[in-house]
Image 1: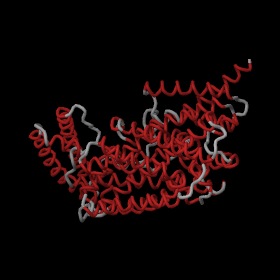
Image 2: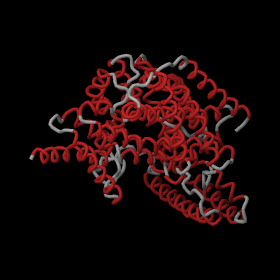
Image 3: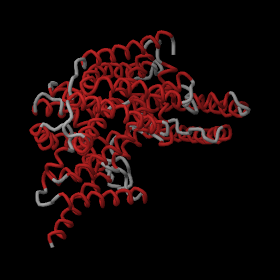
Length: 560
């Protein structure tokens, strides 16, 4: 990046951090630290909820996923609006009326203490690991820009986020997220416009979509009912509904956001705002990835997007072989341009025979590129047996740093940093509040002063930050980060949701029955996942149903 880009990056981050520290000044008790004194308006709640979900993973991995696999991932969010309606009518009024600090306090009132602890433990395990992944995502940026090993950049990013979160608490997180999302929306819109402007002069937005569509990248809807297909309308509406219902209804990182609402009405409006805006926002982010694909049909793309690994092989004994592979790749790219231009003309003339011929020719060239890619991967492993061959998360980053104008690169990089800071700070804060309220205050020290609870909350924030940082150091082995986070959530969210649904609607089931039902449900979920017999989104439905069914059976047996 240029000097101007670095100035833009650090200035943006500096302003955000100062703003959060200013707004969170004067926190003196646990109420201010964990729920921000319950005084935020609906739009603030809505943007905070969105910022917590939209981490750096969203802005790094989603365009890369669209670039390689197309728009199908947008179906993942189809169940979100329905989930928001259920949460607004059931979860929010109960949490607000009871004035709880965490969602799991309610479970002890409804069942017993062991059910509360089990549910809190499931949340802590899942969220602790996934937070490590959100720390790792922006470290990819520094790694690619500074040509540093990702381990060092992970430590830098993690330390910065931990210090910021320990200081600010929920209030700082919520206020900075408001400013962050404003910057993010503006920057991503500008990024989409810039991608279109970078296309050849006679190539418009619709033409780019046609080119991408002929390569299978624009198919956003899949109506097939295939239990092994990860992204269809049905996995989104059914499996996605249960995942989103559990995430927003029972995950403290999200519950903590709308507990800051000044009233039940403000919390509900904030959640409905999120339900209406999330799908269009995700669609636009994926669309940027599709446009990047169209851009690289007219320009030579990197054969491998991770600059750190490429830099290693360029400075090794395998450089001549690497040069030979890249020369072939450049030749294929030039030939692809000829076919793409011919395909564009055929599309405008509606010449179906020519369209089919050029599509076939273009597919052949893409297959040749895939074979070269495999050669390069083998070469990377020869040079470094531990080389990270998954460069999906580097695609969008590589594109913006190599094509966008000076100053704008720094702004977009800061967007990814801001998203990471918001999501990570919120997650670590929720881990801290759950530990402080559900474990420390409940079992260790029931009658401490507000100042003592505030101190322990900050110490727990530091503790969970260090755990997440340790997880982040191993996150590079997880493949596409966006999918990794959602798979991890699906292993736990169904069971957690089942416990809450039993609490709300199944009054005949007691604490002992639901506790063992949840344990059995997790055994079933991990067995199905290990056997790989269902797409991961269905695990949310299976886990939820298992808790309810097992709960009724065990309750009946206990009566007998």
